[in-house]
Image (cartoon, rainbow, N blue to C red):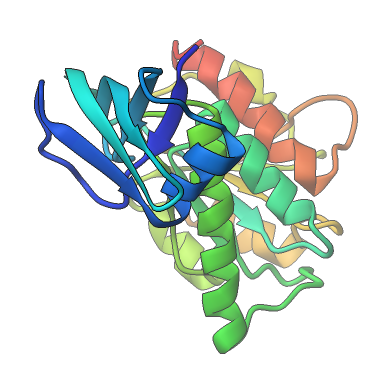
Length: 242
């Protein structure tokens, strides 16, 4: 499989055009991946454009790729959204990385009541930027045509508003319905994963009153770092993606 890289913004490059990789991406291609002139590569813009070409110039500061083919992939629909509660250590980051590799379309940080980690002020900005970097690298590694968006952190009240237009699915080990039993209805699927201590009873009540559905993932209780990715795999089968 050809090496895959990302340009910084959308591109209108066509067949026979040159596409340039600069900055950190060029350095990564030349120094880390050891790309060579004449080697086949793919280049994406993270918004559906997929270019196939050959490297004509390679240096740590600039890589030039001659485009041989251009394909535009439509955005997946319905979308799968992961609402990941903030967690201590790197557990939420592990969830974000794996979810991106498995095909999630958007990631929303959630400041749950039981979240040990707190994103406030400048920390919220840095946290979102950190997750966006993880998502971009994971999408590149997975050769995804679309890089998932990372939303601003939301509160439970803000999360309730999504239930008006999207299908909220809460992972709850006490739920009567299995995730594998739900049938997609065309709406975006918003998967809500709690922190280490789980989703509180009050949050469950507020969200279910707004229309969210409680579902059981399995007989065992998974960590917050693995619950989301496991559920995304189940939904990918239900949506016919896998």
